[in-house]
Amino acid sequence: MTDRKKDHIDLAFRSQIEQTLLDDRFYYEPFIDSHPQDELKPFTFLGKELRTPIWVSSMTGGTQLAGKINKNLAKACAEFGMGMGLGSCRSLLDSDEHLKDFDVRHIIGADLPLYANLGICQLEELIASKELQKLIDMVGKLEADGLIIHVNPMQEWLQPEGDRILRSPIESIKELLRSVDFPIIVKEVGQGFGPESLKQLLRLPLQAIEFAAFGGTNFAKIEMLRNPDAQVQLFEPLAKIGHSAEQMLNWTNEIVESNKHIKCKEIIISGGIHSFIDGYYLTEKSKLPAIYGQASQLLKYARESYEDLQKYLHTQVEGLKISKTYLKVK
Image 1 (spheres, one colour):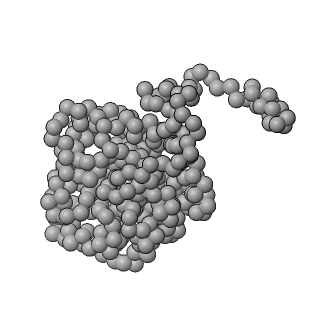
Image 2 (spheres, helix red, strand yellow; image 1 turned 30 degrees about the vertical axis):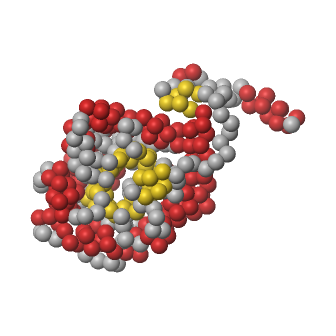
Image 3 (tube, rainbow, N blue to C red; image 1 turned 90 degrees about the vertical axis):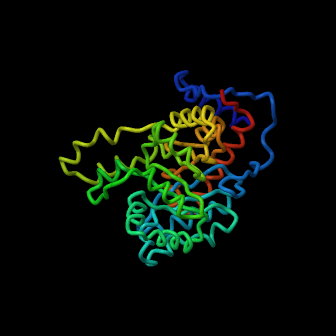
């Protein structure tokens, strides 16, 4: 105890926090409950029971590390009761060469959500060539519960080997919904959706929308860094365009409250979610059932070792338990 008290004195001055750093999003209520004793309460999302409101947002799809990363992430989902979106499965449309890197259903188990992932350009190409069966077969091979379509016009425009989107993505999504019988999630890739895009998406019978808002991994910025061509660098202002997760959530809530024609069931709030405190704040504010997604934070630990990923997620779960007990969103 003496050592502890001495530490408190030595560290007291170093621990002073400027008032400008105060997180003013919550009421802190220390009088109303004891320290949490139980685990997080299970809940239904994407049609399955989850135990942790964290979604593994789609990330790596074709690197040499993809197999290790996906397996570590799937193992974590099984342990903590989370859902997972795979990285781009484009390579599986015509070949099973990389299937082993994505084949994680046996790891995550049958009772948790696992979604395949494909870009809007590939969807457009499959529709044009009347080859949607390739997409259906891919989802089947992976034993996935459904498919994520990522919409990435800025990334494709800035990518040296990028494809061109030839029709409105909303039309391609509508045709996909008419053609398949499994759930569809639509996401952006790091810049988010404006209010008109959200309004149109919320009217579709999607399983969920994933924000992938500005503030997290920005694939437009990644393409700028990949391509040193001077002419391409002139497009750099486009990489700074986007919307934060909180902006998008506020628009979504307004649309849901004012519109009786909402068909989308759920949302995954991702993009700039740095920790459990951001995830808790945003999911508590949502008018639709919501969980929060992380990509780069999970990738950082998953590429090292499972033990590192496990420790990180344990901390996040404990933080959520404390937040739910003592913090009330303003």
